[in-house]
Image 1 (cartoon, rainbow, N blue to C red):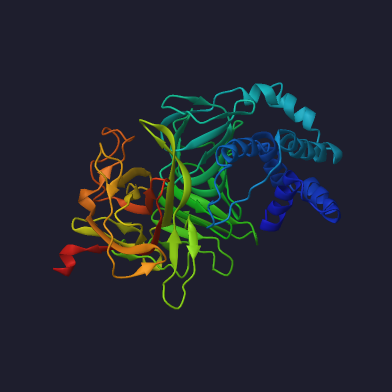
Image 2 (image 1 turned 135 degrees about the vertical axis):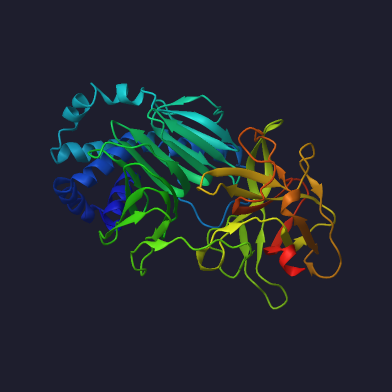
Length: 461
């Protein structure tokens, strides 16, 4: 299934399909069983109900003037009725071309309602601001360990958001960060990762019904393995740590088998081939001239100032205060040649930028375990004090903001307040840095980041 074919399905579900493209869609669905299965999954599970959750979030944020700007996410102002209209459009298409969708409902367990009511997974861990849309259209933001879920959509809305799900057969998937995942299990696990990253540990599956993982531009076929997938609008990258995954690029239909300790990327222009996962490094420096994958407001360079990443408003779930409004920005941690960056003994974090004089702030990392699983997040503040005081100086300025430089030993970073000590290490040292983030209180605060780096103090000495 090519990317343009997937785009036809998405445009139809969004209600944006041009009239002249309808014949192409009809022909595709008549001739391609994979396309029919994909449309059925999206129409049955997604149902446009993300718009309901987004509408609630926008209602909370209606007084805000700053929003995430990098990368842009698809938003819509459609109401509940518009969401259902999109789903009905999909079902109507299936009926028009004679697919017998009513018979499918009968053969898969009497009706879609009974399938939708069936619990297929439970929450085994969660934290941060997370929304689940499912259970007949309800939106839940209060997920807890042990919560049973039907098929639906999980969405994290901050760098520290995460949810670990366990299917009935023991297979696990972890959604972390600013991600959106739709999942189902109608006798075959089907996942659709629209944005962000997912780490999975999959029990052996029936060869006739492997787990399928769709992204915007790739499809993965999984029989039983451990792997990590990252997806954005332009590409999908896959790292396999155990077993083997069959990877298909949708733009041209090319496929490749990816064995353990290999990776592949689907970006246009790249040769589709499995390559050894590069050796890890302990050094990293961000290049703000190319702000790909960052969240925040990117400000280009001027004659007197370098490019900056400005913090913008987010909702953050605090274990004590519930959902609180903060300002935040984040950026992926990827070494040279797409290497993973490990926090070793002696690893130091240095951040430079501009801020209001002696304002409160926090810096931190979201980390992964060595097998790709979510490893928690670690911050510069003490466990009982959420914010620390950031010292500025008068050496240079950006408007009313003064320059600052902050340096901390990775071993001095503290485990996030909502992470329990039984499942998460006391220090990030030895783990893989996945995302750097910075946060401040929303009131009377401002901050712009110009440089971030990880260096090793032992190597310098």
